[in-house]
Length: 155
Ligand code: 2BA
Image (tube, rainbow, N blue to C red; front, side):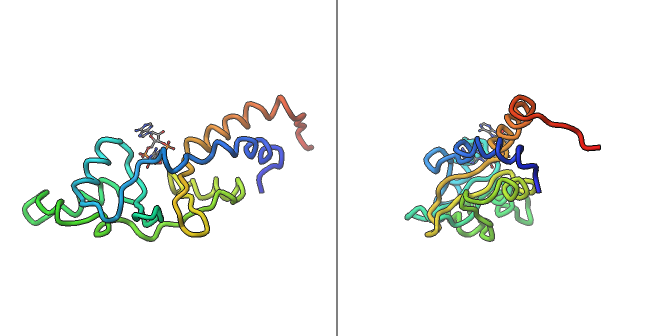
């Protein structure tokens, strides 16, 4: 359990947790791999969400997944990039959240993942919760704790 004062202060920042879908770089599962390669190179994020044409969340793709698909017996061969699609190499088993989870649960999940994918009940992509936004809320909490609460050490 996290202290209730800390939880309240972090929860005050809840409206900032979500980076909305229209601000998140993404590719479609039907896109050729050379398109995804260019997008990932240009946006400079290491891993981004994959969607279908109706904005359903389908998985994640990273540059490493693409370069792995280029590895052949004679080194790197990029010629197959236009024939393969994002769906061929993306990671599919990705847990999602709904942004209704407790702060404690989000903190726990962000230990192992640098961002969490947020979907609605129909699996429509809503955006992401990043470590960065949560760290900003934690930073706010550690600065405000002393201002808003009187904390005494238990004997
Ligand atoms: P990474 O790409 O590995 O980025 C790790 C951290 O490096 C980011 O943490 C951010 O602080 C910084 N960073 C990397 N590329 C950046 C860029 N182009 N502009 C600004 N800062 C950049 P977080 O912000 O906590 O993001 C965690 C992860 O969430 C990122 O991991 C990335 O995979 C994903 N992500 C974040 N914002 C995204 C967006 N707008 N579109 C797509 N994916 C995003």
